[in-house]
Amino acid sequence: MENPKVKRVLISVTDKTGVVEFAKALSEEFGAQIISTGGTARVIAEAGVPVTPIDDVTKFPEMMDGRVKTLHPLVHGGLLAKRDNESHMAQAAEHGIEMIDMVVVNLYAFEKTVAGGADFDTCIENIDIGGPSMLRSAAKNHASVAVVTDPSTYNDILAEMRANDGATTLATRRALALDVFRTTGAYDTAISAWLADQLDAGKFPEKMNICLTKQQDLRYGENPHQAAAFYRRSTATEHSLVNAKQLGGKPLSYNNLLDTDACWAIVREFDKPGVVILKHQNPCGSAEGATIAEAFDRAFACDTKSAFGGIIAANRTVTTEMVEHINDAKLFVEVLIAPDFEEGALALLKEKPNLRVLATGGIDKPGAEPEYRTVDGGVLVQDVDVVSEDPATFTVPTKRQPTPAEMDDLLFAWKVVKGVKSNAILVAKDHAGIGMGPGQPNRVDSCDIACKRAGEACKGAVAASDAFFPFRDNVDVLASYGITAIIQPGGSIRDEECIEACDELGIAMVFTGHRHFRH
Image 1 (cartoon, one colour):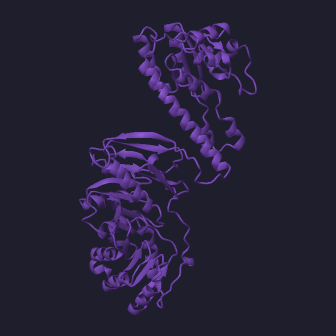
Image 2 (cartoon, rainbow, N blue to C red):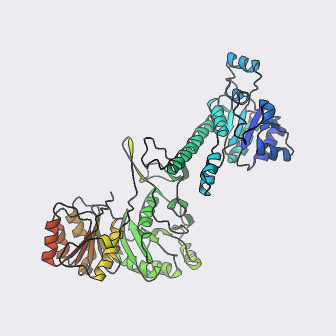
Image 3 (spheres, one colour):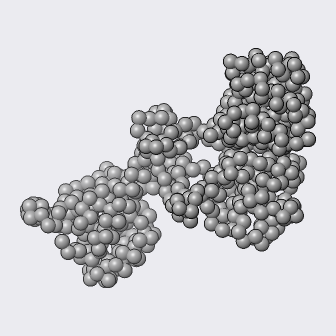
């Protein structure tokens, strides 16, 4: 078939951006008949564009508060009829069905309605029925019908029609059809997710849909030969990474985003002013301080070598003083993320054109949104590692109780070790993570690495382990470097062996009851 000229257009939009100008061009330049519904018809008519109300086409009134208006054979027959099928066209002629060459539809703002806190009944009323039906009918018959959902495409479509004697091309119609099915799929996903939440249908249903919208293309993935893009979830919280505003620096890379997410996840759990410096998914520096500048100084001191080229996350407004300290340290930083930045701090940061600066506007505590990880041929889904842990419920099985100062450091270390790759050991002193042993195949090596990194400061420090000790050799290694208190989940069949080792060596040990693997 030749590309059909656009002679008859049905327009029914929630987002009326540019719709008057589009309708006017279709009518005046191409002589197209404009058919429309409800509020859209009024807007177009008030602009002086000739418009045919939908009920003039269907010979049936819009009814039931607008629930029924386009669900009619005179509409869908005009969309679905195959123009090169003699039987279809004969039936259309017999029943007075005229062809519709273009559909311009965007859907009721369901997600916006939900986000606005509307009640159940209002949300139900904002589930579009006729819109998706028209879109799907037109998209199925894209051989003949152009279907437009996005106002940003209006000018491009008009330009193509001007270049093709009032017609659209098959390539464009196919691309538009693909966009329709992606749009309606995402729309249905949003509805099903909301309804499942309303009905408390369970977090792991038999069928699960995930709605993702592209945030940006990335230069490449983890390595230059890997293509990559960044997508946003429809359930993203206000202050999540995907909603952070970039205030300066180069575009974010795939690795930047992975590391920034890991860094931000740790620092937002701190109650006091805190800074985390992260490299390759592991926090090489972490500390709290009286001010955010002091927290940076103490975090940087944890490992000045590994901090080079890392990610910095702060849980308070970044001050000019903190940025001055970063500059004084001559520290190269890939990303700096925080809730906000002082004007003076931003001015200094903008002197570094490559430093990516992200402002989240606030801090959201980790929520109930599930975590997804792909495996070969499938997806693993789990709760985020967020658990209510009350230190009052922790137990001390050893003879020696931790001192108040030790307990304070143990609780700090327990927050940070969650962000270290398993098998994970974190050595801490005075609310700073001074030594880290990440990702080793055995926990003894992790203990040794963490203590060696802490050096002499290990004496009198505390240690956190993300999982239980399988043997007492972990305790022996930590004790040999001067560790005086340990926090760990407990639960090993050799707990008694480890407790006895602590008692022999004068070490206090705390059991939390929760493991925090991070693979």
